[in-house]
Structure formats: C-alpha cells, structure tokens
Image (cartoon, rainbow, N blue to C red; front, side, top):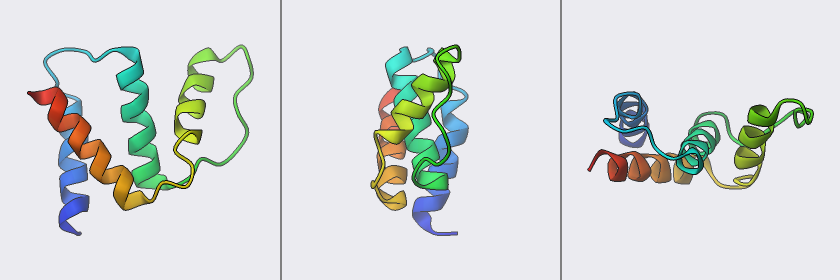
Length: 85
C-alpha cells in the first residue's frame, strides 16, 4: 500500500468520527472524492427522479469524471484534514 493510499484510508476512517456533521454540499464532495479515489469514473445509469439522494450522489461523482484516482485521494485527504481542524 502506498503512502497516499494509507493516508486515504486513514482519512476515510477519520471522516466517520468528525465532531460536527458537515453541510450536505461537503458530504457530497466527500462522497464523490472517495468514490473517484477508490473506484474511478462513475459508471452505470443515473438514478431516477424519485431517488433524489441517489441522483445527488451520482451527479457529484459524475462531476469528477476524468479526475485521476491519486488526485482524488489527495483532495479527499486534504478535505478531511480541513474538517478535523
């Protein structure tokens, strides 16, 4: 496991123990960066209009299409670190 991957996994664990719940926009950004860093570009169909949460998550992840996994991991770690302070 690379240093970046280890920091990414540590940040993922730390994100579950934040003292305050981040705003919804920040939560979507965390979700999208995590998915992009761990799985790469979004695949599959966009959820239907009755699944508003699923659509928001899909859209946030799709907005990062083309962002490299390493860059997504780096941004995720930086975002979690900023939320811990």
